[in-house]
Amino acid sequence: MRTSRDKLFAKLKETVSDKRVVEAMLQVDRAEFVPENVRDRAYDDVALPIGAGQTISQPFMVAIMTAALGLRRSDTVLEVGTGSGYQAAIIAEIVSKVVTVERVPSLAKAAWAVLTSMGYDNIEGHLEEEIIGRPQDGPYDAILVTAAAPKLTTELITQLKDTGRMVIPVGTAESQELLRVTCSGDDYSVETLIHCRFVPLIGENAWPKSALDGWGQ
Ligand code: SAH
Image (tube, rainbow, N blue to C red):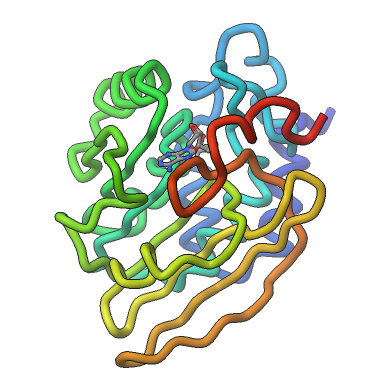
């Protein structure tokens, strides 16, 4: 019988051209990152609740986002929205260093514990401070934002190197698009990749905390 894991990887192998991404996802057991009550669904291609009203992203979306970053082994990558830590682990399989920030302390602590127990020594986790992202450790080769911003903010673009790439969902609870920003010197271009659905990015230049109430209900 084909398991949900077989089905998921058949889909990923067919649709994701960057083989390093599929390889990384084969290495990292998603079941380690989800709460016990949903562990039997760890390989369903869906987002799952991880507590604090947040979710671990759908595996297909993780694959699309990671591939879209065009990663190189030597890259340093910033992830905004550690959540369960799963996406950080996938990126850490491919690049030399990942910096990941999270605003909910209980999620951050749980994620750091899992990542440490799995032996990742190239991931640095931090609690989010006033500015979205983490300028003090930048600039980064790539930034992945795993929560939806109301608009593209320069706050994050300025944390990229001048050849940097950023993948970020932008939109409302009802309608979001995954954007890819590619820097070229002081300039940048923006492409729309696909429709998507993420929890809100909270911050002064993003959504207010009150956006969490009723988001996507
Ligand atoms: N990448 C995660 C999915 C996270 S869901 C995974 O692999 O599991 C998005 C996360 O972004 C949530 O945990 C939410 O608390 C966090 N978040 C929202 N706004 C944030 C901000 N301004 N800075 C850091 N994290 C933020």
